[in-house]
Amino acid sequence: MSNHSNIACPSGLLSGIQDDNGSLEFLGIRYATANRFCPPIDVVSWDGTYDATQYGSVCPQRAGMLESIQGFDPATTDEDCLFLNVFTSGPPETNNSKPVLVWIHGGAYTNGSSSTPWYHGGNLAAQGSVVVSINYRLGALGFLGDGNYGILDMVSALRWVNKNIAAFGGNPNNVTIFGESAGGSALIALMACPEAQGLFQRVWAMSPSIGQLRERDRSLELAKEFLEIAGVESIDELRSTSVEKILDFQTSQYLSANKTFDFFAPTGGGVGIESDILNTASQSAVQFVVGTNKDENKIWAAFDPALADADADMWNEFCIENFGDSATNARETYEKMRPNESPRDLMSAISTDTGFRQRAISFAEARVANNQPTWMYWFTWPTPFMDGALGCCHALDIPFAFGNINAPGADILLGQGEDRQLVTDRFTAEITQFAHHGHPSWSQYDTDSRATLRIDEKTELILDPEQEIRALFSQ
Image 1 (cartoon, rainbow, N blue to C red):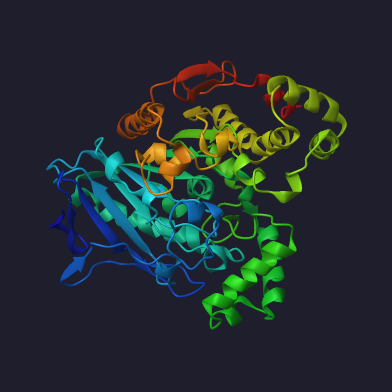
Image 2: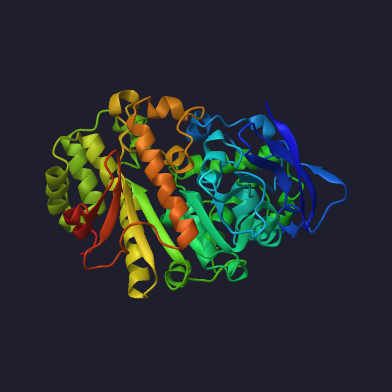
């Protein structure tokens, strides 16, 4: 049973939900409005009492596999989608001292929402923080061309947090932004966004899809392709096009280009973002944690019919495609490091490295070279689902990060083993410590030891994990 609870913040009076355990949640708070293909307009205030007892609409999208697993409801979509949610463990403290964690969801910049059950912030907030989750514009609506409207939405949400979060007991000067996949790379884009500076002090990036970040020329090239598919000559002509047609055009472009994932993403040199995102972010003085999952790509490889009959010849060709003249060395190295894996799983391991892990390492080392505080972890807990075929796949860490191991979909994916609780207790504790103090429990990353926290049933600090594979990408 839940009761209503009111909070007065600078923007106005809010009526939210108080659970039996005393935790508070304020849902569907409008932080901005926006016309299509225009920057957001911050919500300054409202009259009367704002009903914050249910989630707001999310950006229109076609649900992908992960969204379906997570319980996404397509009936909740609307272009009017700029809402956020606030979770806190009890009545606000008078000294407003709790650290603030702002979650930015993933979904390849085309899918996802803050209302996914996996992202409910109550359990994480119970460890002593205020948790905020946000919606932002996706796909063409948020990232067509170089407009970066989705990133500008995030900045608007951070401004709302800065102005209002003290009313919920949060410290506006101690904000950690955290996110996964596209949400993780969005954090890096925000580190290169001048308008966002000072609105957060810490960053925790989970499996950031760094390869999605684009240069302006690439964004304009893809926008031209999109307009050709839509049969129009300018983005302005799309302002009156139905949302359903825009989603159809997105699907057509995706299918026409062998399912690449960079059609819609933050653009360096576009509106609001410095031209060289990675270089600028590598010099940012924020405290920064980055980590990846051991088997990111298995969530896709396991369901890819083209890999169903992968054999030694296909594996060899894959090595040649990725490593060229170094293919033999690469093949032998992966087979040595992962001796019991099939050709399909070995190919997936390379895709995990090229898409996630080695990019994260490279970015971490760029920050180290600039003397910026950086930590690295490696999440390796394997799911028992599908007899373990997915390993420690992409997005598997999310329920653990929020303490939501029994959320819909997560309960199936994670099983019922007692080790789940050990993993989530450690992961949430590390995130909370980082939010409180600006450092997790383990040593900073450097290029001498490459200290990395391995998070699993047994969590331990290891030095330069899979060094021989890392060396393949350093040549």
